[in-house]
Image (cartoon, rainbow, N blue to C red; front, side, top):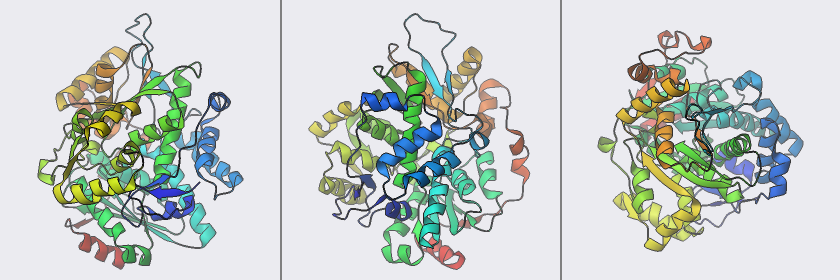
Amino acid sequence: MKYISTRGDPAQRGFCDILLEGLAPDGGLYLPAYYPQIDAATLQRWRGLSYADLAFEVLALYIDDIPHDDLRQLAQRTYTRAIFGSDEITPLTRLDKAEGKSGDAGLYLLGLSNGPTLAFKDMAMQLLGNLFEYELARRGETLNILGATSGDTGSAAEYAMRGKRGINVFMLSPLGRMSPFQQAQMFSLQDPNIHNIAIDGVFDDCQDIVKAVSNDLDFKRRHRIGTVNSINWARLLAQVVYYFAGYFRATASNSQRVSFAVPSGNFGNICAGHVARMMGLPIDRLVLATNENNVLDEFFRNGHYRVRASSETFETSSPSMDISKASNFERFIFDLLQRDGGRVRALFADELSKHGEFTLASDDFARIADHGFVSGSSSHADRLATIRTTWDQCGVMIDPHTADGVKVARELRDPALPMIVLETALPAKFAATIVEATGREPQRPPATEGIEQLPKRCKVLPRDAAAVKAYLTENV
């Protein structure tokens, strides 16, 4: 399997090369040259596999430069009860049991937040840490990871990379924009290979800095810069696995179709669903849910994509989705435009860079329906109401981001098909909103008690790529 850039660079790369590289040299994102196709016989063979074995089967379709025995061991080392709390790894819970409507296929919650940092990002990041360590050891090299986080990516990356040989992590986050729990998870880490940098801006500013540094090819190569954000294909690939796992848990046969509802900010999580659907997984609709920062919802409604300025990016009670520039969105547009790298480059490198917006041609917009996407948005009041009713009626407590997904799923679901909402994080990470909605504190794992009071270590920098480069140079 070879990988190509969304912006048309003619070079094709192997998996292990793009694993360590991040962005393509032309500023595009990597995608496989083709999507392997899954037939009914393969689905039947995969049904009933353990999560680790299922992960191996999916990964092996895309990775041919790691021996399969080693790849299987990496998957088995990653997806364990000790790390994710159960043999299922991603348990499925029905949310609408109390409704009991005849013929209703059900609304489900796929549990993705039982890893070390209590967020779905652990599902991919734990694998990514093991892949990095494996490949760097094979090459005898080191890597300096530069990432940006709106909340959960940072802690998931740091917990996955702490203590890993040959790896340093430099994680940018928006100053004062994360929940106290999220901040504490990151800033309390004292490992010498972990560096937290708070940027005086919003998440999009952090993401822009990461891309600016990555696009300086000389600096990137000289300092061995890699990425863990979902612009890294390996992370998105790991997320494809739980769409298959969720499908098998919610269906009795491979003739059934399902829909997925996904809280979306940076488009990585739902892009993994797009990949699974392109592979042949029987997904009817991919329901994208945004908060008040509804750039993506507007696009899927009218084909117009307009990036918001920092001053227009709302600070909400689902802060990990306070994003107005979705970096993974380019991957979907590449497929939507029938893999025409020149047209993608014209949209993203020219129109979007110069004007901050673009509009799809009508025939391109019409093809969105062929890919199964629909969308909706949620407000603070909606989140509170959804958290409250899900707790009162189902006995299940959900976090604010998951609530955005549940709210939109309830509005758009077809009762004849199972609708699976992807859980984003455990409620303990957003206690203030949970208390506001339900009047009670969410339960938190014992290991996280008092985390907000631990000593913290963080460097505050302006939203300036040069300042970040200087800090990296001093600390690699």
